[in-house]
Length: 97
Image (cartoon, rainbow, N blue to C red):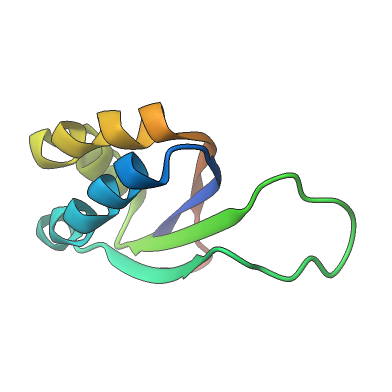
């Protein structure tokens, strides 16, 4: 079953966040991850949204997503994201096989 990582962020240290972003894409490949969206100006169609960036990543299954999040390659850059932004990060199960 496919899985998605959804991150909603507010960035408060652009330099440090950009350093994180520069190393981000190479961490996905070994786990079958694909960046589907990264938008710093998503349009709110309904309700209120207090963040400024949304990221959507697809993985083959929840186990691959968890393995990516715990991987040494991702953990090596994650401290820049956590120090430079406030975020809610969700793991969402996809529908179907």
